Every structure is written in structure tokens, then in C-alpha cells.
Image (tube, rainbow, N blue to C red):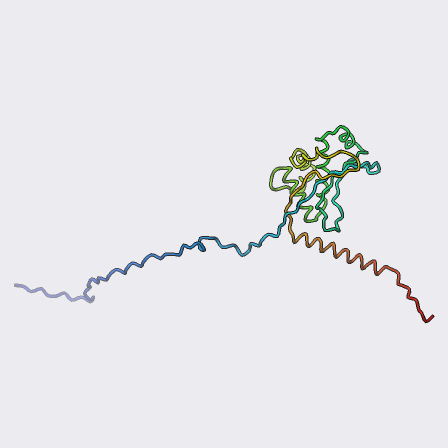
Length: 226
């Protein structure tokens, strides 16, 4: 019998190494409480300071030949706290076409004149409440949420005359010298902006009072010794 001579090699003999598989880790369960389900409020969100203000829309009939306009609007004294809470459309019976519409009781024309008077007047102010009135009238007239400033006079007034807001005009007496409320208007306005306006008005009054005191002549004091 022949014996095999082992073959010499520079490499060590290789042996298979068997290792056990790692144990599977249990699934991670997350708490599903109501607190985690609710979305936490964003830090950059601040609560709104808007308040609801009720504005009176009124109609006044005058006979003023010296006023060369058939209609106009007015809001009251801007120095008072109630500025903007009453919007008045004034129809002048002394000039056409307001005089002709009043005589015929042409409600379509009268509603258009009232819409023009109010929309034109509120578009001229930067007061927070009046700005809100302008924006709300534009929304009601054009039936959409956004209104550009250039649309808030002629465009808005032409559509506003046909809205339900002006339906109450037909129950108002058309007599010279009368002023009647024909509709309420609910608007949203920033309370902080209203407070800022009132603060500016108070500062103006204080400055005016101070100027009057400075310009007043000095008081002559009576000298009893003389």
C-alpha cells in the first residue's frame, strides 16, 4: 500500500465557522393617546384680536341748493370714538338727478345713488373701522371674498344697488329733513387698530390744547400793593 505524502502549503487550513443568528428585536410600539393624535398649535400663530362692530347705514334727504352735488356721504366727527359706526348717504333734492328720482320714487336709481354716496365716502378713509366697512360692502356687492380698492367705488356701487342690504330703503320716508336708518351692517375689525387710532386722535387733541395755551395772552395779575 502506498501512503499519501501531505502537501505542504504556506496557508493555514480553512475551517468553516458557524455562528448563531441574532435574536429578532420586538417591534417598537408608540403610544396612541388622544394627546399625541391632536396637532399641537404652531408657535408662530397668534390669537386674532378681531371684534364684531355693528354699523348703521342711514339715508338723509336735504334741500341744499348751495351744495352743487346731487348726493354725498358722511361719517361724522373722526375725533370721536363712534366715528364710522354710522354711514349716511345724503340725497340733495335741490339738484338732478336726485331730485327727479325722489319725485318719481325711482327706487332703482335711488339705491344706486345711495350706494355711490356710501362707497365713495368710505373709500377715502384709513380708519380701521371704515376700512372694514369698505371691504365688507365690496364683498357683498361683488359676491367674492377679495376686493381690490379700485373696485370698491363704481364697480361695487353698481352691484350693491341690487343686493338685499339696500332693500330696506323702500320703507324709508322720502321727505326733506329726515334721516332714517335703513340697514345694519356687521363688520370685523381689529381692536388693536381701533385703539391705535383713538390714541392718535387723543394725542392730536392734547397737542392742540397745548398750542392754544401757548398762544393765549398772559394773564394780567392784579397787584394789591399798587
